[in-house]
Length: 202
Image (cartoon, rainbow, N blue to C red; front, side, top):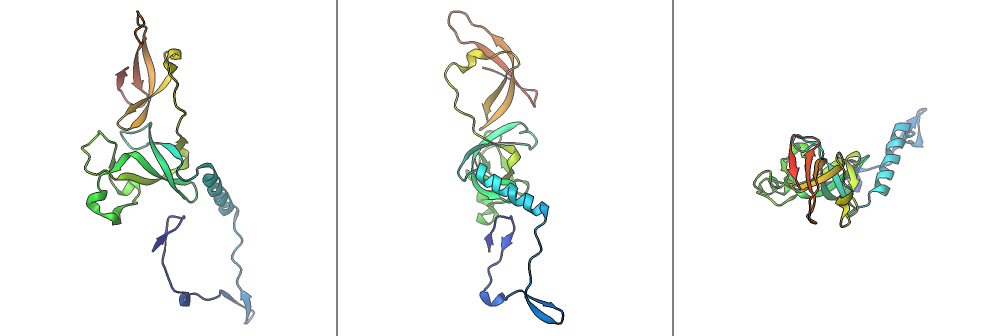
């Protein structure tokens, strides 16, 4: 059995199990039947898949928005392993791990998130270092942001959006308090989660 882009599996068969697709019409063989004309919806899906392949090359460094309870609004880094028809990317995460992969064995690898257990590092005691591999909708994927320059925080103002590195991912936060320091000491910031009732001092 070998996987194919559509997500289903193709079963290996011998050539003896295949024959020409002859067409019987008008009480006689009229040649090979012609596949049905591809409908507009199928053409749109094919075009979408080509766009996904062009926009997201294999091994591209990306971040993926998490939507599961307790992780909403966080972005976790990974790389593109495959393109899944018509509009998904198979992502290998850097800091999300499949905690059941080693116990379940190789036959369980490759399951989607809905079928296997996953956690962010730090939330539970790690029992496996197998990196999570799962298809993700392309609408939840973005390139990794450019690196920040020294002194970037000097222009921060109340209400500005920032990301906090926490538990292996980047979490969406808002600057809610700014304390100017005297004597050349660095400024102090209080940031609040956009999705949870949590604050951090920086």
